[in-house]
Image (cartoon, rainbow, N blue to C red):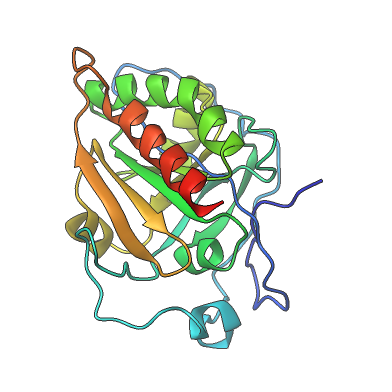
Length: 227
């Protein structure tokens, strides 16, 4: 089985990390959920020391930014993670993910789609992304949905409700949203250099190509040019 990402409850000893991830959620406002936890492994990362992580140590240096052409900072996330890029499925394992993990993976580009749990537009985007994720993974890219107002419980309910077959995470650093943008923003990152190569906004389903479709189109195009 092709490993997708490395969970990091303690300093890792290996750096080969393929990843398949997804991102784009919406409004939990009217969404119900059951009380029991999703099946899977919950990992405590509270004792992890980033200074001991060789992935962090070899991350491209700054200055960092959030616009096209900028190197993006090594932001960290937690959430429900897809492990096999070749067979995107609804994730059941909770763990940690960082942009350094993606940088040291095997995929050339990653698409990150931002969402918030109260926003109806984010719900629409998530439903669209669920239809597009397999296409991005088949091209060799990583799809990740970032739930900006998420925590463990909110993210679990979101995953249960929308059944998005991609990694769904929330940022641990409040500066992430200020750097990248709020809900319905999407970025494509060159995972060789960690530079943002595409950034766009929009969730209106009446557009010729909604943000989830445009983002995956760009991911597929970039992955094809990297072959």
